[in-house]
Image 1: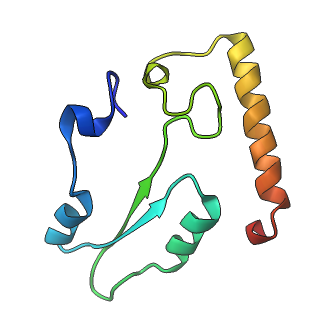
Image 2: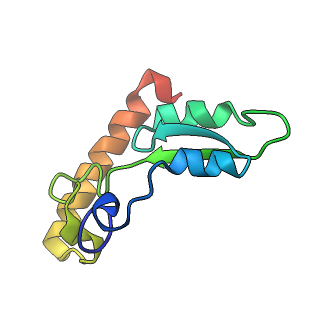
Length: 105
């Protein structure tokens, strides 16, 4: 996401993985909002002997905060005290859920 829209609408990057592969990288893509999945990809590094490893983590801006998630306005806006408190409640609840998950251990 960029200040006015999604990256793809403003200045498309795709096929990003292919661009890095053209420069000799071994590339993996992962859901960057899934800590367990991202950790699994990190454990696989190095991906190929003799090549630098690169992970493209696909993320959603503001993931985990209901009123900020995938909202362009939050790219450049600062939350007020009430919004900050609400966001922290949501993030703390999400963290507690991750910590309690058997796959997080």
